[in-house]
Length: 104
Image (cartoon, rainbow, N blue to C red; front, side, top):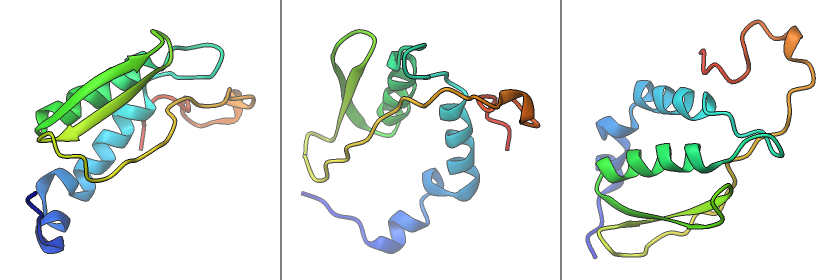
């Protein structure tokens, strides 16, 4: 297993504040409201992003609510568990921008 020094990871272009903001904006702009939207589109966007960084990915489970698995060069190192759905927006008219627009 190859490990990278923390300095290398923290200065990687893929982790720059601008890059992370751009990714977050893209992810937020994919609608995943629980009970209204599938999370598959967002899982596919994240999978594509991971693949371009060298990860092997797979979607498993149901079509509408798949889980995304990713491995860095075939070596399991860290397991992250989270969810990609959101709750409905009850006060959308009060927002300055559409809450799913990704506007920063």
